[in-house]
Image (cartoon, rainbow, N blue to C red; front, side, top):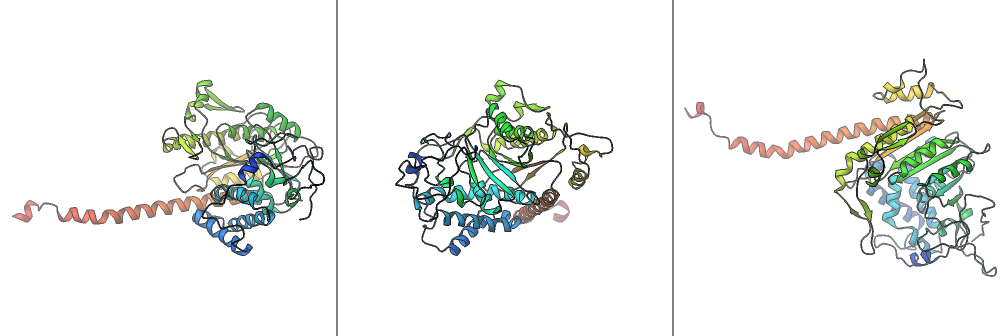
Length: 455
């Protein structure tokens, strides 16, 4: 394999570490065998593997596939590129390609990837910040999907579980072997066998950051506010609890942050309700009791991902309130980025009932100066969860000037989703009537004969 020049922290301060990635964690994980329903590494040709991936993705969520067929195809091709990239490193492939996990991440990423592609039109030198990235599946897909370093400078994978710079990774850290390779060996006579950094069309760099710490937001602001910094796109997918509010604060704190895509996950813990009466986002605040809830996912050696708490369907109402408040928080956040009303702009606050009018006004009536910037946002429910889940809310936000392509597409998709929902409700009602018809007929036949008929 052709060797790659791995960057250092001196070359790029975003990189947390590129030292020995053959950690205890990766050594343990590499022994994991692929799931029974996953074809073995060498069982399929590239064409067969890509076709299998696409078909499995379609079966995972056929309705989502009908909305984003092109994205599904490109995601399948991106996963094929992973297989090619890790060729010869079967233990790493078995560790990274856990089918259920990858497909879950892919389903949640499909609407995001499409929106990013639409937003990227006519953009250059963009930095993508992938908050709470985990292993970085979303950025890995985007790197192969966008495949144009002139448009995207780099993707920064931010997560508190990455190792610190120049620190030997511990078992509880995320291994970055799939990002950089087995680099940084001390023995010069034994060079790295696998190097992946230069294989990514758009560079991927890891950054250890704890988003819950206020100092983290200030440090990110200092790092990405230089005069030569290009536009920043913040991706915040599957963020738990108050991490969603931190993502919104970062969006407003970074002058170069142009767009935010947020998909909230679970609700804030009930202890926030005991600690404070309100959550605050700029000049917008809302009661903690409206959105805080007990319960969390817990894993053990025997059982993975078991819910501990009240029945989850009890929390659906609070989750929708949480998303509603987050949207309002984006809109009314204070500091230097505030939605403002000026005479002659039109009543943007009153057009929520007509999304098309809102889009057109936001395109033409833009206020953008040093003290105030119009921010447009939209909450869209896209059914990425089909097995009883209700966490299907996506928040899209952008500071002016707006990307008309992305907003026009979101508006059309909202119309399509409303039409689909109406069609599904009509089908359910029709099926209900068909199911009840035999019972109604039987009841009618057994009704007592009236007095007139007996006489």
